[in-house]
Amino acid sequence: MRVFVDPGDYTLGNLGDVAMLQVALRRLRANWPDARLDVLVRGAEMGTPSFYGAEAVPYQGMADWFAERAVLGSAYDRLAPGLRAGLRGLQRAARRSWPGLLETAMRVRTSRSPATAQDVRRFLSAARSASLHIVAGQGTFTDHARIHAGDVLNLLELMERRGIPTALLGQGIGPLTDAELRVRMARVLGRAHFIALREGRFSPGLVAELGIPPDRVQVTGDDAIELAFEACPERPGSDLGVNLRVARSAGTTDDAIAPVRAAVGAFVRRRAIACRAVPIAKGPSGDAVAIAGVLAGTGYDGDAGATLLQPIDCIQEVGRCRILVTGAYHAAVFALSQGVPTACLAASQYFADKFDGLRAQFGTGCEVVHLGGGDFTERLTSVLDQLWNSADALRTPLLAAARMQVEASHAAYDRLTQLSSARLVGSGR
Image (tube, rainbow, N blue to C red; front, side, top):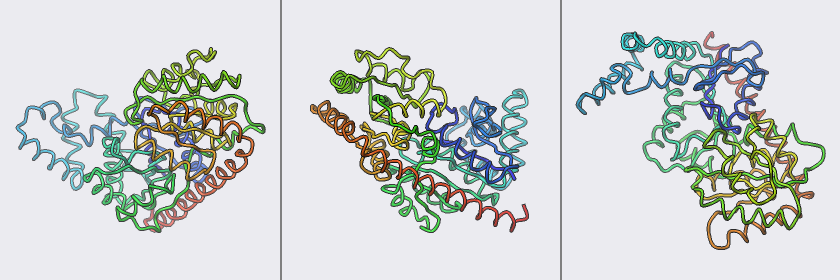
């Protein structure tokens, strides 16, 4: 048994995507203890225990295999437009019908680049020997992530052409207006074993519009809920958790820092409480810089969460909070799953839909506050007061909602095991 896993973040730089991947690998390992688990990653190893013995497959090998420059390399750029189009068509045909021929051509082209050739070989070896292909939890199928969505669809299509069972788990879908992407998704996702969605407000309708049969679709909640739910402390925390996402996908710039700082600063001074930084995106362009800007002048003297390197670190920090304010989706997931009421900051339609979907899953205690407008500080302060005052009463229903989603998510993996086992037996694999 060999399972090929396509994660939400190839660089493993987003703690929410890493949490979803860890849960997926843990469940796959429980269902198939002796299976080889291959994970597509870029520049990272899978050697820590939290990745359950998974093996790294180089993303660059896949990128080179599907690249327009697969055969000619940089010489492709010197071709006339018509010749480029013709070559792209030939390469697509070769991937479908004559993959050995394309691989030979690439081997010749990469003969002076052993590392490139090795990456392609490792990718193809993992893909060709897969018994099952999983797209682990992510929010890739949306307009702003079109390039990543193309990667996911390329790999799904490759597996489906080889008759490998495929499934998508913990998926968030939309907003989705790109006509070309919708057509391709309808064709590729329509052949998937089944699709588990992390919210039931928007994604089911979009999947139905793509023509996916409803008996192959299930709403489970986010896979990462399980990690946070398991770590929930016996007693609620006493601090204010803070996150702010400044990114194109979030529709925010550094201009968002000042109004959030004004609301947070006034709130913590009036309540005489401490703050905790809860970054989800790591690295130089991650959440820590924006969070530090929000916490300036509040008396916070920490490192803005720079030392929270694993999902469990972030989860435990959230568990020390009474409420959370966040611009990052998975900070909200980590909080709500521990019974911590959350104010979610939305500017783009993408983030508004993610947070509204999360509110539909958890109910009261997940409040969406839209950034912008002259009254933003007052609106956010009012929501923070409301959540703080009702935190004790909200804890139990939030934890009940988390438990239900964990159970639904486990049911999806059980369904995967039953369906794929029947398929594997029938195929003789």
